[in-house]
Amino acid sequence: MKSVLVVDAPPMLREFLKEKLVAEKISFDVADGHRDALTKFLSILPDLVIINIESSFENIQDFIQKKQQDPNGKKIPVIMCGPTISHDEISEYVQYGVVKYFAKPIKFDVFFDSIGRILRSPLSIDNTPCVLDVHANNDIIFVEIAAGLNREKITLLKYRLSEIIEANKLTAPKIILMMSDLQLSFVDGYNLELLLNNLTSDHRILKRNVKILSLDSFVKEFISGHAVFEGIEVVSNLSSVLNSLVEGTSAFSVQEVIMDKILTSSDNEDFGTLDLKFSSDTGTSGESGDLSSAKLRIVVVDSDPGVLKFMNTAFQAIGAEVTIFPSSRAFVEKLGSAEFDLAVIGMFMPEYTGLDLLKILVEKHINLPVIIYSQIVQKEVIMQSLTLGASSYLIKPQPSEVIVKKALEILNAKH
Image (cartoon, rainbow, N blue to C red):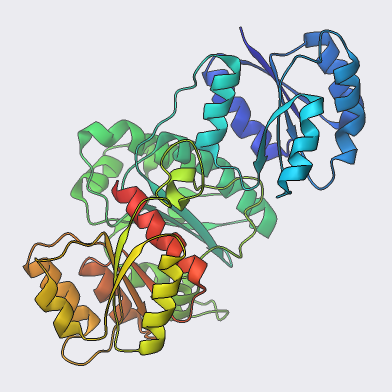
């Protein structure tokens, strides 16, 4: 049996790695601190060492140097994960047997693929397209799932939720699971059960505090047919759920929750040790699923010249082919004769509004992913846009990297 020693991993990361590796029939040991690491390393001589660096390499340098001095240990490969560092710094670690360095937050699809390659024992990885995101606002945690159910991400979710609960010192967290775009059937029952079990695995999450936003009849039937999920409510209206959960809470309004936490990027949030995004979601470099180098065809429709210039610069920076329309009518006339991968559309424009364009795309049966980019924050407009098929609604202004990242997430989920 292959064996892995994990050094200085935070609790949630440690438990997640343990669950994954043990399921793959790989022996798993942990060590805290360089003395404990050296003792365990010499006693078991694992096939791979995974070292977590919190802030400084010096904390583990004594262990890694003594490992290389041992005739049996120096050939054992090391994977490191830690803060972003320069290529020159990474190259210095080669002398210590480091074969891979992962900057945090770790993209676990590439991480596990690397482990499998090093151990010469490929790990099973669920590659089902899935966009999974988590935001917290006071004692409410929003979990959004789109595109599909990915077992790796569902497993990660359990530990990510516990990490958020610990970080925010929540005693009675409320969960809103948003999966309104998913259409499931009995073949998805196994993964749906895994999702619900992981969603409620933390003892601080009570089932009566879990609400699921879904328009899929299968989801409601599945939950009502399982006594273990009694108390979980399936609803079709987000506003009513938010009103019920925030009733009596003066810290924020329903509209603020929608605007601040559901529709804005989580780039500035503290990911802790576990990120729910994979390399294929973000377009970052990896051995698979990197769309950032593809020739994407982006269309931007907005009457604001500043927005058109901003979007053109942002998407050309990743090598995309950008077509701009200052006139919504001109865009409509071009539909059918030109192909695009994704559209970024404003809301208030002469001739056709953003809502009008979404309706036209539906009427013409044109399956074009759309990001609405607007200053409008009224929840009725936002919800109507999403109902009409918009893939995302971003509130102006947003940094260019946020818009590009969201576009790549949508396109990777589609593919």
